[in-house]
Length: 360
Image 1 (spheres, rainbow, N blue to C red):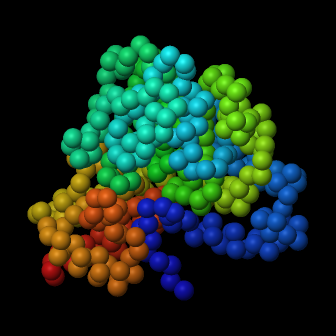
Image 2 (tube, one colour):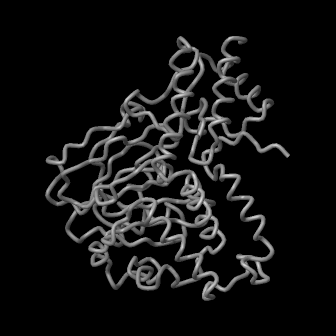
């Protein structure tokens, strides 16, 4: 069987090595006579998987001891509520940098729980760019500043994060975590649904500065309090054991590939292949994002007519490409080139784009 040329935005491609490792252990995980899906989450066999995943993530991202790693459920969407529940202080305001649909949704949930508002926005520019942030302009009543590091729908990405802040920085990194080295100390809380760069859907990673845990109110529902999960090593309730196991395999794969630095070089190469084809097409392909805000994870573009777009997507499907349709809210085309998408698949897409342009 030939592997699909998978450019889905999420759930997205997983490394073939990961899938084969999981296949080899599916029926008999480490001589237990059971699948990892059948193990008790209180067993020593599963506990080893759980702790190994945390250790690998801490190592690969250089997470300092000042930060705790949590494995939660509910996706980034639940974090839209948990963050203001735990971090929004009474009498203060949560500020949000609006760079696309997901930051809008995060703000929409925050205003249900307290005072929250947009701080900067690129909506008037159709979310084509990442707005600049003047740290000195952040109001004194700020409880935290929230950003979305990569915007899957519009194909924009923060390449330089806000610095010299006097408030906690919270980042939704669901679609680009592990794509490049990070200075974790810049951030007070990072959260990421796994289904794009970390593994399958079902587990959400939260990296939180331990100092922030004191903000969580004891009156919160137990399961929605970050302290609950920190005190119980993310084992307060039954965790998504299969998803965490596959997360650990993805992290092992990143390690085998040479670490985050090596992954970042491949991501730069993959993105450059597609953006060069767009830029050299003399207007046949048009990128949505402005040059300095382009994403290395989601390449969004349109063709010079609706007819050409429909023909492009139809022929791409016939050629074996999957997931190239743009998001329903903006249309056009989108190639999601997360870590697990091989360079060879991106080369084939770039060649397809070139051939289609010449033959159309």
